[in-house]
Length: 561
Image 1 (cartoon, rainbow, N blue to C red):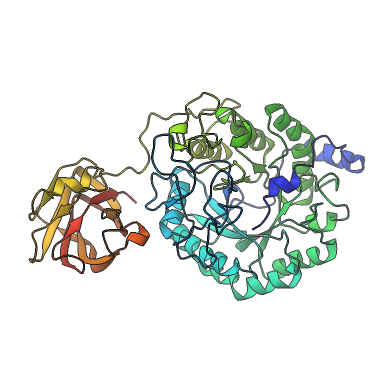
Image 2 (cartoon, one colour):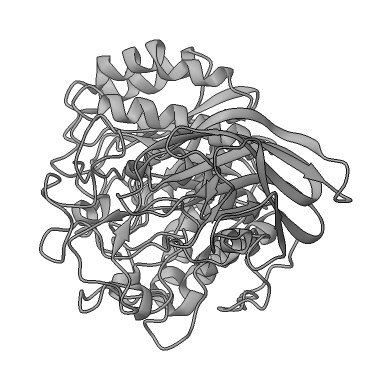
């Protein structure tokens, strides 16, 4: 497992002297407005988010096996004594969770974690990106030649599918940490595997070129002991392939001090875009302002003078260290980089629960966090915050970057929104109808929120149906179907079609009849997606069940997408 970047880089403290040799040039450049070397594209003028996608759980089908990136010993379940995370995710919109060895949550529910290998997890994350205006995802790709390779290959395909579905952009971001033979292997990996992704309409392009990022050249730490020459060769090779190349570089890249090795200036300036690292550099508002004046302003001037795009890293703050100040830290960082005139922003990170700087939905209170585990929830400083708070701040920061929101140092985003979640279950608690039922297993059970209650149709007669009335026509595109999660419910395939109607009498087909596998190993859950279609009435028509002579359903959840 790759060592988290922050833990390697914390020693690079703020306050190094600025290089005097470049002062005159930088002051002259600062006198004029910063200019972009490139026009708006998929990274210039956009919010990019770092996407790890590196969590796996036993039983999810991931080739790597075990609790990848959840546990120090991945072959043992995560617990307070065997963990790599410092924050707890909010799983309410995910179909499947995996039981851990953590204590129960404060509300008594089992402590479960998600797998990035489940397509529905990736789909949910990219739906959030769409709903909260994260434009582009940078998929992290570490050395793929070892045991992680097959899983990372599969994750690239899952990310592609989700990006295409939710109209987001993505690009490959290589991290060379610990990659001894990167100079040859990164070229082979791109040529034989990753370059194929550029055929996707969702793959990010800038200046008409596919985007690729290489993170880690020039860092002065044992994980990246590479000399400049092979690094420069790799950058030039990618550019020769027709790529727009981003450099994930040290904070002090321009000066070659502190976290940067000397002698890398030619490497850094070969990139089309510079994206300096900032995680672990400061946890205070004063620190952010110090970097703005002493590092970011000279960086922007240097890039502008040389016609290089500048994409500084912005961060919500380490939740586990109390840096967030209920959103004020993140907003100050966004504000500073927008007023700087940066060509784009790189948010670190979307799903980095390991280092506590995630913007993905996170546990709001100790009621939804493992009891006594020492993990801070979003309300850690006494200010209630909704699970999606940092996604909402990201959306507002993006609007400010694009000129859709006035430049302001005052955070406009309330910690708790009065608006409903962007994609609620439209069927919960709504009226239902059915072809019939046996005993007390009526259709109301499919919308009552109880995973153990269920509808069962009359036996030995097909077809049968159950439907929900959403109350008004809505554009729907996704159903989540569940049977009770108990292992006593053995795996079964139910053949069913999805119909939709705006008037309750004329039904069209939303998803054609097909066998749908309900398997306890997968939470007895089936997700059905289809092109977004207006419907008030959503009906399931059952024509077969390999596990019982009737239609069965515990939950029918209907979503817009």
